Length: 299
Ligand SMILES: *[C@@H]1O[C@H](CO)[C@@H](O)[C@H](O)[C@H]1NC(C)=O
Ligand SMILES: *[C@@H]1O[C@H](CO)[C@@H](O)[C@H](O)[C@H]1NC(C)=O
Ligand SMILES: *[C@@H]1O[C@H](CO)[C@@H](O)[C@H](O)[C@H]1NC(C)=O
Ligand SMILES: *[C@@H]1O[C@H](CO)[C@@H](O)[C@H](O)[C@H]1NC(C)=O
Image (tube, rainbow, N blue to C red; front, side, top):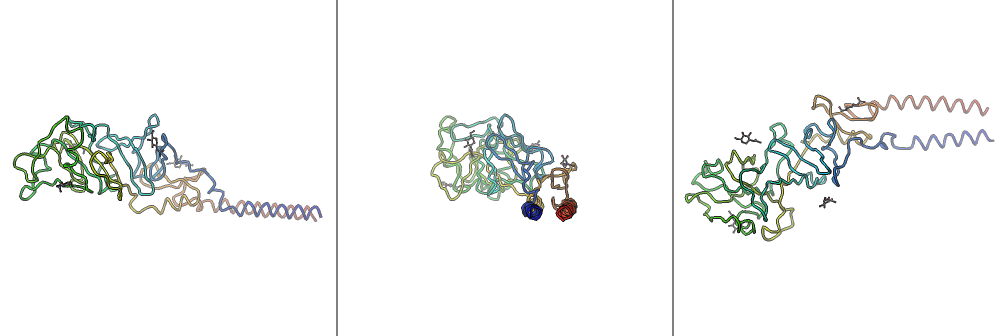
């Protein structure tokens, strides 16, 4: 009677263990981390070898401040929106409604060629280029000398001129067709010029603002200043989803290209189940042997 009870409880215990979806799924993601109050998760990572290879050497955490580093410079990350796959960046040398920073000190926004497929400022982000020379590539090659400057998502220089910062600097209003000199400020979407490089564009400064639709704020004083960047892993999300579903953490190999699924004691080029199946077979034979032992003991 006691042995029957023992066997029953042993098998209920086994059933309990085996019914759990996976031991692996319980493992903590070794690549997830924090910087201040920001969560760093796939495709981003702070440790080399973690995250997506296109996002390597990109984020750095310094004194709880998350920094984003690309060829045009370093930016503070204000927010990572994983649901909309967007980042909000801040450049300390960017002009806002309160200050105009001249002297070409701003970063602008330009990424390395190999990284450019992974990042793009959003279409509703406006870049307002300030104090560009008449020889600027911005004003060359437009038929009829029409300026490329325009409003982006309802944001443009006309409204920006109403900011308190402009009352300190002062500006001369010029029409939309140049001849009397370029405007003090020219608003463009990123798509129009592909790189905001102040030295190449011969501009003194810039500002960047974005609107989080469908919110519409009247006046430049109510705009959000910063660079809103859309990121994408270019459709190869499948690897990581499958890896994480088996309890792994997504990373890449030392070549900086091959994606790896990190499963604690081993790395897999697929998921944690692929190699785990061998060890679960071992577990099963152990179970069978133990069961046999218990049955013999109870006889
Ligand atoms: C994170 O902290 C900053 C101040 O350090 C604050 O402005 C921001 O709202 C916080 N974000 C979240 C999501 O709590
Ligand atoms: C910006 O343009 C200058 C001059 O053309 C060039 O030397 C520099 O490398 C560019 N910077 C970036 C980040 O592309
Ligand atoms: C941009 O919008 C402002 C305010 O709505 C308007 O006055 C201005 O003409 C627009 N500029 C361009 C270039 O469309
Ligand atoms: C798995 O890959 C990562 C990243 O390349 C490496 O840091 C780690 O040491 C590897 N782990 C094992 C068990 O090989």
